[in-house]
Amino acid sequence: MATKQLHVAMLASPGVGHLLPILLLSHRLATHHNLRVTVLAVTATATIPQYLSQLITSFTTHLSVIQIPAADISAVAPRNANVVTQLCVMMRETIPAIRATISAMNSRPHVFVGDIFSNESWAVAEELGIPKYVFVTGNAWFTALFTYSPVLDKQVVGQYVDQKEPLEIPGCRPVRPDEIFDAMLNRDDENYDVYLNLAVGVTLADGMLINTWEDLEPQTLNALRTNEILRSVVKYKPVYTVGPVNKRYEPDALKGEVVEWLDKQPERSVIYVSFGSEGTISAEQINELAWGLELSRQRFVWVVRPPTGHVPDGSFFKAGQSDATCDYLPEGFLTRTQKVGLVVSSWAPQVEILNHTSVAGFLTHCGWNSTLESVTNGVPMIAWPLYAEQKMNAAMLTEELKVAVRPEVLPTKKVVGREDVARMVMDLVEGEEVKVMKINVDMLKKGAEKAIRENGSSYISVCKFIEDCWSQIQ
Ligand code: UDP
Image (cartoon, rainbow, N blue to C red; front, side, top):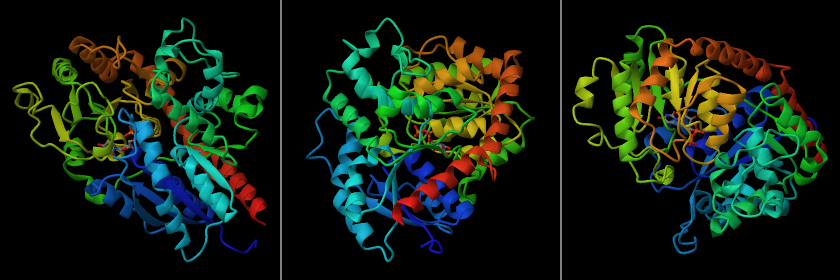
């Protein structure tokens, strides 16, 4: 057996933020650890956006990537299903296709790894008699809250958001009620039950891989591994740190005009504004953000997307669809800012932007992939969380790691005014505080590089994961 190549099947649920880290981890397993990896990418839209197919293609030299169209859930999903519920139902209903795809493979995988929405697929791994692991594409602090949610559910009376005190997670930094994961916002909603079921489901895996590294979250990782209460919640399963897995370059076809524009700007002068692959803000907020950028008189690249009411992840299943008209921006904005700003519709080559020398800061929705991309390129941030666990990420970036500033109001609750936007943007380009943030983020960058280097903590952790896989299949 020892001479055989370990074959891992990696299952990704719909969403760039899920597929991308699965592809990246798979790539690392294949290129650094000589594993054979087959990625099963469940895709929710009939037509894959162009950027996504280009992204997938860029990985196919070292990986087999099989796309599995998600089952149509229109008849089975609850009427008020939020994104988490839709993903859970979609992944559950797609199990027959996942099972059929694995059965049709020439060589059967030895190990199954899936993201947090894959828990219903553990059954497929069990049928095959192979170990199953969850890959949490968020950080360890989120993992702790997520897996501890069923306990909080028993302990806390009333809505979490109405609690006067932060929510205690044993051994970890407490979570402020207004920063909890979106799926926990309303306990009376049936979506919440789906979330709790998901939280239990991930702990049934044989172990957890987390997109973080030891030096970034020592306290939480220590708690997940040694705190008796948390260990019992994760059912005494091993926790592996595999991060940061993040993009280091963009496919050539995606670079385009943005990089050419950045090449012409002075060093560390541009603010990059993006709300991830699907984040949207209200029409009023777009207006204030545009005016704020203009008032700041700083250079910017802004990835714009049309407003979608008050559902910040409203375009989750439409990511990458573009609307080139931009008629939702304030009148005359494009003309007045044409010398200092570049507005990109829907999708930009984010990593090329973040590692460009003319970029000074990133106004980000704090999706974990974007956060890691900013950190590993040494770019300080404006933390502007919108949905999912992004409020926790924002708190971590501003209060703990001190690599970001944040608006005076929580963007999920109130509109951030133009003066506030202008202040943050100016501070990020030329303020005093940014000097300390830059030192901090550069230190994190170095730590991240060290972690994934040969014999770094994440490298060693991946080796341990592989060793544990072998020991279960021999
Ligand atoms: N992304 C990109 N260009 C865009 C928007 C997003 O390349 O215009 C990538 C970004 O680099 C990141 C991912 O999409 O790797 C978004 O993941 P994240 O976890 O930050 O947020 P999500 O989109 O899942 O909310």
